[in-house]
Length: 386
Image (tube, rainbow, N blue to C red; front, side, top):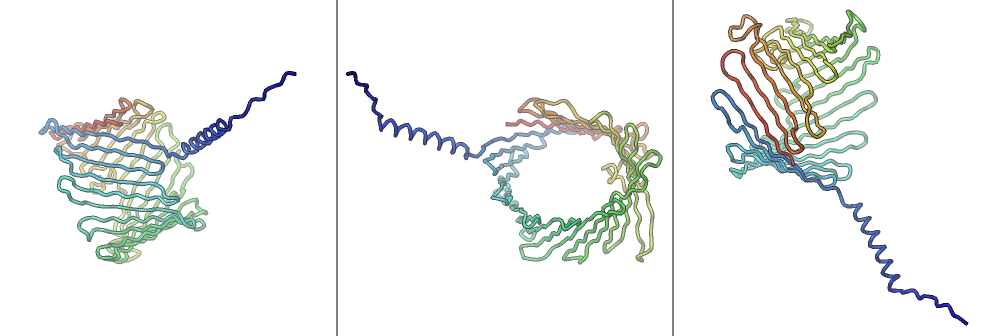
């Protein structure tokens, strides 16, 4: 009779297979627990050219960053005349539900400590809290800033206090709140600031986006008002926002100011001081304009005290690697008669652009050209990214 031989099971092979399966399982689990790690940074050189200095290195910046999971560390260094005048070490990340950050800054050429800032933020019982400790030289300029913000019903609030720490002393505090005005579809707000030197430094009341006319002369008319009280003066600043239903222009603002007199109900002056707005061409190109009616308001309208009017255009530029570059061109005008300007009072032309040329290289350009006389300036920026 023929017998069938049953193969024996090798216990050692069985153990080896089990161990192998266990190792593979643990390896896959361990791989899933390894945090993401990324490294990057850039080197940037800024070069400036003027009529008196054809080419000068304005500054060099180097940044490196290492991200491990939820934490990121950075080293930033800036150089002037080939000497490093500023280097900072920073780290930020999440510890549970708490966001932490810390930055220390030094002057390596003199081995001098400049500042250290550390902060934390978290949410507790629907209240957002943040605390920032800033230490610098002199020590009397160091402080701690605590901020609380949240929502109670329809009221949004923010409370902040700033304490000097060397020595420990109260510096300032602020309380702000805003809430909807349902009857008029507007937003109301109030803010008070108190300092150790002036007591009540300021009290501001605001009203935003009060609808005056739904459609008047083809435009939607909204009114925003800021009423400000300080120990020296009280000021009412109305802003009339016009939203034309036109083909190009979408937003125009008329700016005014009412200054109070010595008594509570008295008015010292009423002033309409400017107009500004923007129009759109296509989807992304925008034309901006601003006109100041009084010289004292030039800076707030045009950004330059010597020019009362501007016309600008900005939009996107084709760029490399999935990013989009930008350009901006602005003409500034002086109030006539202005002997230092060209035709129509044109006094200054400025332009800028930034594009990414390759995955690891970006270029920026800024220039200002007065129409009469000297003073032109060109700044190039070269950035190598890794």
